[in-house]
Length: 628
Image (tube, rainbow, N blue to C red; front, side):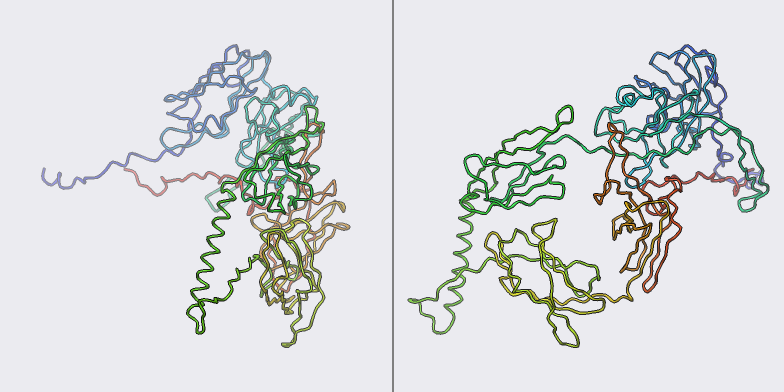
């Protein structure tokens, strides 16, 4: 007995093999593909305990329901209750995706859809495709895609979808249970979940053409693996293909036509900032209440004229702690016609003018005391006849972008904190440095077109050459009395050997296309307009790049969104499907850009933010375990 007891090993029961199989549907009530169904209560019975994961996000009921269905799990059962009255002669589908998983291991019952009909037959056609961001070709997850058999444009804005689906993590969708016929296809970021486009803030997509779903017999290869590395057999399998299965919808936000002053600021006495909700087609009219503003300010406007800064010139005007102004600008009425409206603004500052004057006076007195104290220590100081105190000149801050290592196509820009009152170009000298010899150069110095506080220096810069810029003190005088200090900058431009050259040839596009060289963050590094399907990029710094092309239909040099009411699609965008690794001293030619490649396959995965999910691989944890 002692021997038998000693031989027994104390250990933890292994519990048997891991469960790696998904749950199996054993029974459905009503049955799968049942017809003449009268009630909207569904019960699904599985072979093991199951649970629902993100059912609200993953489960799609079609036709869409006004009242939210109740979907829940208990033990081996999943129940669905539809509270809307069932439509006659209609196919209903409850697409679970991978929301049903087993309770212990989380193995999903993938791509499961329960289908029934209230009529004599079940509609089985389907359409599928992808939804992409129109501007970036980025896949969009969670966007509703719907069908209308009503072909009028008004159906999208007045009636809910007849059948719907939702895009997955790859931007893909499949709408099932469709009857034969002709349909319009739409995509909608449905903010209020009513399945129709009734808010300008909702992202949308629409197709210009109709679709007529159909099915056909097709063949596809099916690979049988002997093990994880060896193919056993590749056989041809017949299946039913539902088409169209390659739809691509380009989603966009319409320009917000609402216009109002979203915010106003007076951060300092001498300037006022107005922020508009959207772009202005023309400058608003601004009038002072109780004072005359005409000719009393310098205007700084953003490119779209939606941010306006008014720099007041006269201290007698801006010393007032509160200013009242009337702003007249145009807003669209209910018919989209622009009419004038006027807002009255009372603009106040946090710190009173008297307090600012007091603080400035105190600083001046402290500066004077320090000056006299320092002078009193000097030999020959006469207390009865002290030296005269001269306040320091206010310094105007200047930021210069040039430096010791510059790109040939780089900018030499001066940026100031306030508008300039005057510029003395005679005080600016530019030299070419050759063997320690300074040779004077001609240049052009002018204000930037997009920023009144920025000026640019243009010259005939040459690769590999060195330059010196000397700006005498007081060359720049600010609007509020500040003057610049002396500036001396040495500049050196990179050699041609430090750059790459890229030649691009694109087939099938006209001269209204713009090719953009972008980095991994999709920031535009360089751009060129196509001429005869060709363009060239010179002085490209070595690195990894990608290419994007926009078709500038209206010739304004930028991408423009669409407008559903006018049937206007957003401007087309294409991606070159490979990354470009450019090295110095090399010339590259890209002649294989095929814009006819499906849009959802063009954008390189490296810069796609919405990554596709990793393929689920069975862990096969039982392979290395031994069971008694």
